[in-house]
Length: 283
Image (cartoon, rainbow, N blue to C red; front, side, top):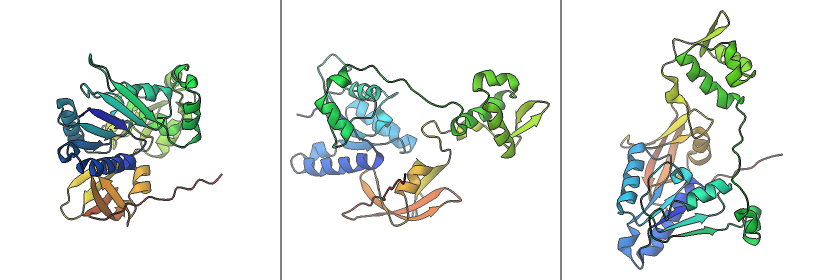
C-alpha cells in the first residue's frame, strides 16, 4: 500500500543487509517500489547523506533502513510508520525513533520487533516496565581524558587555561593538562596553559559521535573515489583486508588497511556473501 516507512537497525552492517534483503524480496512483486528503498548511516559522506535525506523528505523514497544516525536532528517529513528492529537500548531512544513517524495530522504506526536477547524478551513479557518508566538520565564521566582532553584543547585555543578553570572541569583537569603538555599540544607558562603554535583549529578534529578522534577513509583503489569515512574502532572491526564490506547496496572487497594514512582501499565485487569478524571478550 506504499506506506512510507523508516526502519531502525542496531548497526551499520544491519542497515546494508536489511536493505539488500527487503529490496530483493520486494523486487519479485513490485520492482518500482524496490528501487525506492535506501540504506542510511552516519559514516556516509555528507553529500550522500544530504541526498538521501532530501529524497526521503520529498517522498521519492518509500522506505529507509537506518542506524540511529536518523534518530535526531533531521527533518524526515511526514512518514506513516516506524519499525524498530530490537530494543534500541534506552527508553529515550525508543521514543525518539518511534516519533519519527506520525508528525503530521494522519495516524501512524510504530512497531518494535524484539530480538532474542534477554532484555528484549523481558520487555515483551513485561510491557508495563517500559511504558511505566521515565526516560533515563545521561551519565558520563567528564574527567575521562578521552572526553575531557579534546575540550581542554578547544578551550585553550580560545583562551589560556588557568587554575580557576578547575571549577568547570574538575580537579582532574590538572592531570589531563599535564598529559596534553607531554604530548606537545599545550604549553605551560606561569601557571597558565596555552595552545601550542602547531595546533590549528582543534574543533575540526573533535569527533562528536565517539571518543576516538582518528577517522579512516574508505577509498576505491581503482578510481580513487572516497566512498565513506568511519571511526577507528569501526575500521578495525569491519574493514580488515580480505573482508567484504557493504556500501549503499554494493559489495566491496577490502584490499588494504593503511594505518599511517588512515586509509582503507577496496574494489567493488559481486559475491553472494559478506564477512563478519569474531568479537571475543575475555573477563
